[in-house]
Length: 158
View 1 (cartoon, rainbow, N blue to C red):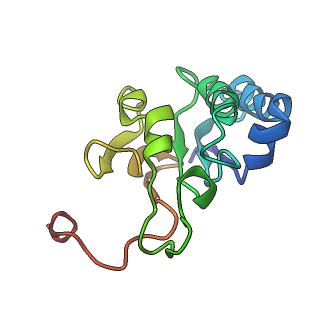
View 2 (tube, helix red, strand yellow):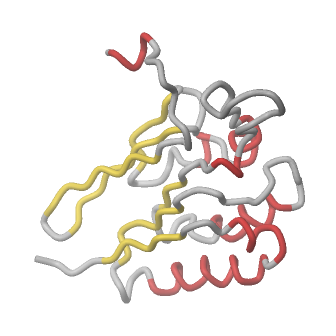
C-alpha cells in the first residue's frame, strides 16, 4: 500500500486579505512537494477570502491556489466569508449567495482537474465532488458550501 498525503488549507481568509505572500508560500510549498510527499489532493476548507465583496482579495486567493494548476488537484469549499452569507435582516439559511465565488473561481476552471467529478447546482461551483485513488482506496471528497439549505430541491432527490 502506498503512502500518500492530502494537503489541507483551513481559513486562509486573512492571508488573502493582508498577507498574500503567506498564502502564495503555502501554494508554492504544496506544488513543490507534490511528488516528494505524494500529495494526491489539496483541500481548502473554505473562507478563501475574508470579505467576498473586496475585489482585491480574490486575485490574492486565485494566485495562491492557481499555482497548483497542472501540479496538484485542488478542491475548494465555499465558506461564509466567500459569499454573501448574511445580508442585513436575513439569516444565512435564507441567502448564501456565492455569486462572487462563482465569478472568481468558476466551475469551468476545475473541469480539467483529474479529480473533478461535478458540481451542484450544475453550472456553479458552490458544491462539488472529487474522486481519486490513493493508498489502495478510491476516495470521494465532497466540498459543500457553508450552511447548506434546509430544504431539498427536486434535483437533490434524484
